[in-house]
Image 1 (cartoon, rainbow, N blue to C red):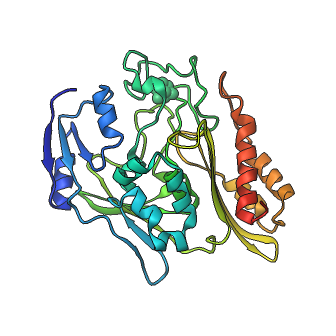
Image 2: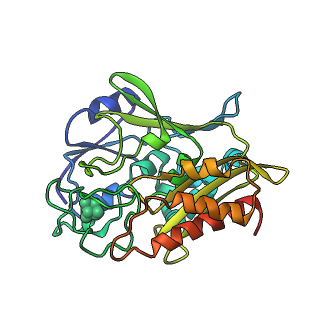
Amino acid sequence: MKAFQYTRATTQQSAIDAIAKPGTKIIAGGTNLIDLMKRGVIAPDKLVDINQLPLNSISVNKLGHLHIGALALNSAVAEANLVKDLQPLLAMALNAGASPQLRNMATVGGNMMQRTRCAYFYDTTMPCNKREPGSGCGAIGGYNRMHAIFGASDKCIAVHPSDMCVALAALDATVTVSGRKGQRLIPFTEFHRLPGEHPEMDNTLAAGELITGISIPNNNFAKNSYYLKIRDRQSYAFALTSVAAALEISNGTIKQSRLAMGGVAHKPWRLFDAEKALIGKPATEESFKQAAEIAMQGAKAYEYNKFKLKLAPATLVEALKHAAGLV
Ligand code: SF4
């Protein structure tokens, strides 16, 4: 590993000033960053530890909006009664991620900033446009079993690895970021980006901006929501496909729905058209199958991930059945 400087930021402004300099990275839980540094995927000159900043609160405002600081631990958020009562979908998604030990170290902001787990990205002997722009993509003609079926480009077909982010995309969360120009809000669905011509850019954070927290608006989804993750083993594995499903049901009819998929795209994949198709429909398996058909429009598989074309709609139907209380 390349030698680097390490400092602790004691104020938000000092962290923002520090990361404005090229070659400087923020460290919080370090659960992905340290792996990347050990493997030589990234080699920062300086790490700025932000763990002393007061950004770990979990609270609800008068409107019922849930606010979570960027440094709140994944395990603390998943176990918070406020989260379990108001946004159980988020707690479910968090508990589906990584392992208890990792959830005890990983922060909400770090979870959002984690990099893809594409094996070619981590193997510095292989071409990878995300790690080294212009070098090519080892996965397109390689072993692409874990890769995207939506929104990929001819430069990159990687998927975003987070479970938490799939729930936050479904729940219309907002990200608060601070930089030298002040504070701004980013809709969660616009925080991560598709690869396009620039797969090296995972998100829409500007240089020198720091995530300070997320907010989830009040909703009526607590009773009928479910996070379903399909993976190769029951723990400590990334999603082959996952679905965050949230429904508001009145007298058996769907009034509102929010749906997002994980393991299928470079960002949490929100299913706006399928959501619309469910409104006013009975909460039945038949309605869910129709929504799944709509959700899969435009899907494109590669040599080794064709199974996702069947697995993704099946995951969606199953998650909706759980959310609706049919199973
Ligand atoms: Fe790199 Fe993306 Fe290709 Fe993986 S899919 S090798 S991350 S460019």
